[in-house]
Structure formats: structure tokens, C-alpha cells
Length: 329
Image (cartoon, rainbow, N blue to C red; front, side):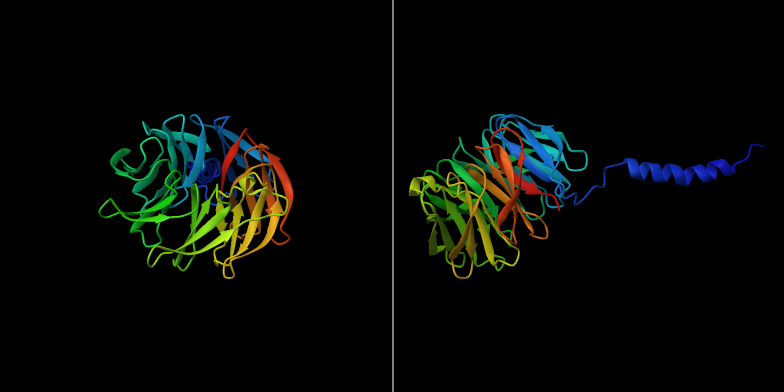
């Protein structure tokens, strides 16, 4: 009779080795993901050392990036690839694609993650897609060149900017119809909502401003204009906006002015302008909000800003024409 005890000892060791080797349950990696339009990659940076971890090859011209609700997958809208690529956050590779989506600009998910709302630039529409089947359920006609997309806190509405119409469209999810049109500054791009769900902040790239919308009645409440010293208005081009969880501070990338504006939300005052790389497109805070990662489209790098002293601590080269950055933590 063969002894059986070596097998008994081997089983725990085997189980342990499998757990160590498998990346399937990786979560809160701290990695920063940066899309690069001209290299057709998503660059992965270590969120602490800022070293490059990997370049993930995608379809052509990845721009908007967003995690699914449980942050196991990262979706990348690839405009010239007519697809939305699906990246496994644990494996750091493209594992799937939602194909035949013509020129997707930006998107957001329903609260349960089952539907995706996509701005379709060529069609002038908001696409409503079933994530599981990858089938387009409906296209809701809106203004020309739709860009930013954001699902409301209550999950009942989707906000969409139209760059040509200078309008924010409010789409009712249940009826799949437009229920309000709000005229804002010229070429609106991206959104943020205050944590109390009372206000919607909208950047307007060609107006050097943010429009603040009262969500109770969809009226313009106030307007904030950016005017860093030494710049013409046409060189101040706000796009990205990232708001702290407590709703006290908003960081706004102002494009060709090569700066991030720091706005006190309550007073509506611009407190500071932080010098970053060339053409700051979009920005994201890490989990403890100690760092702000800024994607700079013309200097091909990411500026890492220390939020406490409002200064760049490091600039990290990434792919050509970085557009968006998101952080997994």
C-alpha cells in the first residue's frame, strides 16, 4: 500500500500556489490607466511608484475610459476602430470587443451595469446598448456631435452634451426620450454632479467656462469663467472635471492654457491654477484624493499633482496624444 501523507501535504501547497498565481480576483490595484489616441494603447502606471506596468494594445484611437460598476472591467471607446474594447483589470489585456459602434465618443452605465449609454458622434444620437448581448437597443436622436455622457444619481436620466448645439440633453431612461434641452456655453464637453445631486457642472471648451445647472428645474444657476493671467480666452479650453467626494473642490482641466483650475464649489471662486503639461485634457483623483492624475494631450505625458500643495510632483511619459486617465483604487 502506497503512503498517502505526501498527497495530503501537497494539496494545501497546491491550493496556495494556485491562489498566488491567479490574477482573477485582483481588485483595487491602484493602477492608473491612460488612453493614447495615436498609439492605440492604454498605458498602465503603478499608482505609487508611477512606473509603467504595461501598454495594452487596443483598437484604433482609444479615448474615453470607464470601469464597469464593480471595477473588474475597463471599457475603452475606440473612435476609429468603431468599437468599445473590454479590458480585464486583473489580466491587463483586451478580452472582448463591442463591435460595429460607429465613432463612439463617451459612455456611462446604468446603475445595475446592464445597459450602456453611448454618445454616437456621426449619428447625432445617444445609443442605448444591452451590455450582455452587445446589441444596440435604441438610438435617441439629440443634437449634433454628442460628447459627454453621465447617468444621474437616481438612475432615471442620462445627461448628454451636444458640441454643435451648445446644449445639454436630458434623456429619460424609462421612456428613452429627451425630456429637457438646456442651452449652455459654446462646445460643452464633460460633466460632474455635486454629491447632493442638486447641481450638474458642465465644461464649455470654447467659452472658457463652466455652466452650473439646477437639477430640480433644469435651469442655469450660475456660470464660472476661467481667466488665468496672460492667456487669451481662445486659449482657455476647459474639458475634464473631477470633483472631490465631499463636493467641496472641483479640478478642471483648461486645455491649451496648460493648467488645472482649482474651484471652491460653495463660493464658485477659482482658488488656483496649477501648471501641468501641454493641453490638459482630463484628470482623475486617486482614492484618498491625495493625488490628481492629469492627461496632457500635446506633451504626451501624465502630470501627477500633489493635491495638498497643488504642485506637480512628477511627469510620466505615456503614449502619443493621451486623452483620458482613470484610477483603479
